[in-house]
Length: 237
Image (cartoon, rainbow, N blue to C red; front, side):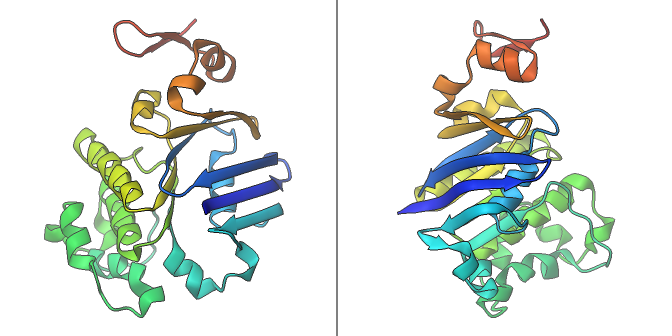
């Protein structure tokens, strides 16, 4: 059973019609220049944005899945976390269990996993950007879903926490979850099972990172050159 199926999805002036299928247990990176449609595609896939075409989760049309059930099946991490109220870190992470009856399961473990235990009682609107991002990732973790949609989850994180999030994503896929995440650091592509490339709202490439991230594509999409020795080095033409 496929985890996600998008057929002829499109958003006027933001995303051209495209088809995309993600398999169960995949870690998929969504890349592209600023304004290429990455956030839009993730919002469509997560059911947060109306679209032409159809979206299906695990073989079921999304429009037929009740909202509360969606809250058990999928977790969303936005690119930026904005909090207008001073809820505690612990209570925000606990919101991930709303669709499960607010049972509090896994909250303490998620706080520990993201180095948030000492901040559990602190208001979220008094945290740094990176700390807020870790709160949102912890909230996604306690949902215990089969689908994760993360919009640039690494952008605000320091090196240690970014690597920890990548390790977590790999662990989640080994338990049968699918993680679909946007990112900008192409050097992390070797950690992914698959890379989806968007350019000007259109699907440009899709496949294993070693096949997709060619020098020709990077030059055409990002306007940078690739040197592979030593390591993966990107440079201006």
